[in-house]
Structures are given as C-alpha cells and as structure tokens.
Image (cartoon, rainbow, N blue to C red; front, side, top):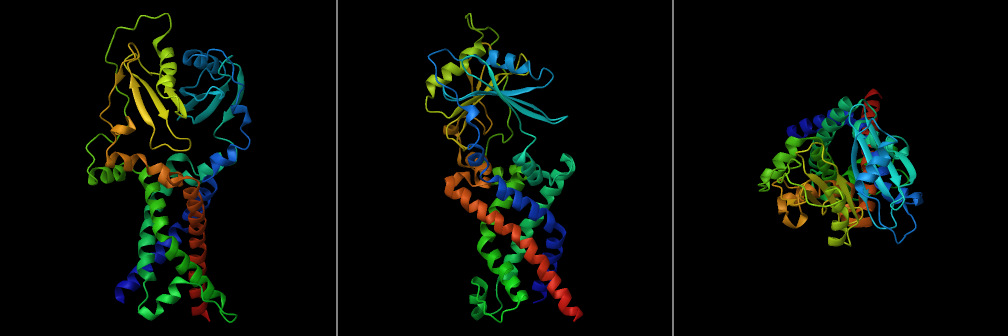
Length: 372
C-alpha cells in the first residue's frame, strides 16, 4: 500500500509536469499520421506526361535548381518513375532552410517550388518535435517529456492493477448508469482508456525517444546483439582514376540503377561534398516505407560500389538488430503495418492526448473534493 502511494504521487507529479507537452506531441502526432495520403490529394504537379526522350542528368538538375537558390546547399536529387517530376532538395541546418524544386524530367523546366518549413504539416511537425519552441530548447523539452511519459505509462499500469480480483471488471469496461457522476466517468475514461492503449502508447513513445537520444539507440542496438556501426557514414572513394566517358561518371549512375531495380519506388542521389567522398544513393523499394531501402555508395571516379560497415547499407545484408533500428521510424508512424497500422497509431495518439486532460480533471476533482 505504501509503495502504491509513492507510485501514485510520482504518477501525479510527473503527469502534471509534462501534461501539456504530452498533449501537444500526441495530438500533433495524430495529425501527422496521414500526411502522405492527404498531400497526395493536391500534388498533381508531381506527375508529368511520359515522353520518348532522355531524362535530364543529375548534374543538369542540380545546375537548374541552384539558379533558384544559389546560396543554399543541395541535399539530394530524387528520380522516380518516368511520369514523376525530378525533385531537387535543398537543406541547411543554420539558418534553417528546407525547400524542394520540382523539374520536368525531360526538359528541366521548373514546375513547382515547395517550402517544407511553411504550411499546415510544417506547423504540425514543429509542434511534434519541439512544441514550437526554438529548436535546441524544444527538442530537449520534448525528448525529456517523452522519457518521463514512459515512466508515467509504467506507473499508471501499476496503479491500474486492482487491489481485489473482483474489481477487475470495473477496470476493463465502462459501466455507467444515469446516476454515475462526472468524476466517476472521468476516472473510467482515464483508467480504462489508459489500460487499453498503454502497450501501444509505450511503443510509440519509446520509438520517439529512440529518435531523440543516440545513447538509447546505441544501448538498444548493442543489447540486441548488434555488431556494426549504428551511425550513418558516407565512405571515401576507393579509386582515383575516372572511367573513360564523354559523360560525367555521376550522370551515368541513375540510369544504371534504374535498369538494375526497375520496380524501385525512387532513387535519391546525394552529391559528394568533397573530392574524397563517395556518391550516396538511397534506393527506395516500397512507397511510404523507409526501413527496407538500400543505402548504396559508389566511387565518384570509377562508379565501383563500396560496401559499408554501418547498418545503413543494402537491406538484404541487414541483421535482426540492424532491422530493429531501421524499422524504428516506420513503427513510430504506423507505416510498418500499412494503412491499418496508420489507423491504429492515429487512434492511439488521439486517445493518448486525452489522458493528460482526464488526468488533470482527476487531480482537480480530488482537490475540489477536499475543499468541500
């Protein structure tokens, strides 16, 4: 009994401390779940008419796009199907800059410019990742609050366990009558709802914390038997002599990969930042999924493929610990389970957002009861 009282006080104090942050993170996560599906309703500009012509090269795509943003850094260029626009992505961390230039894959004509830092979903993501605070402060607040929320889930489950077995029925269903007052209803909403979603809310919270803290990623990876480097790293070139061709070696890579993987969803090429760095290409195999992508590296002179010791290489070479790390984001947003998984995450996030509200009402009800 004494232990449960201590756990109750801990649960209450932690809940009141982080309630607002947990509510914001949960409700914004709920809104983010179907971002891709919603955006697909108004992104017709990304589709072009197929022509019997050669696609523009990655070098040409970069040159055209950099005329728009000459002072910013090209993060990478995405090639998809023949009827998809080429996307040149610009990203700078300080000052924060994240925009995409969409080009006609045949003519190089500029179709659209998207600013990923503005609009509804940009607002939602900033709330989810940093509760609209400055980046460095907000990310720390969210990360710490999610770790605390994991403790809240564990302590809440311990408190949920009834003292007597006969009371179990009251904890697993809503048994309301006309005479049931609002305090009892609110208690049931908090405890019964919390019980049914606690396991999935724990998974969502843990995968979120996983992305916030490298030390947690390291601990999980090594504790599951991981032997590779869990940090993403682009290897250096292995050859100094370029292949003989009238075309730049880098411009030969995407056509080659498209022939090798005709069913791939897309190819995101990252230009080498130095003369020593290799070319990095992310081959997306499944639409809407990230974990099964191939991360491939090629010598920028000879185009010889370079193997990596890190977990981010070819998916076929991934071990079980590697897959656990790579699946983290897809698990977090529910994409790992397709549309069904996203629906589950949507409702779990929505119900999670209700827990701080019912928790505060519980606290208020107890305070009000004592005064009367």
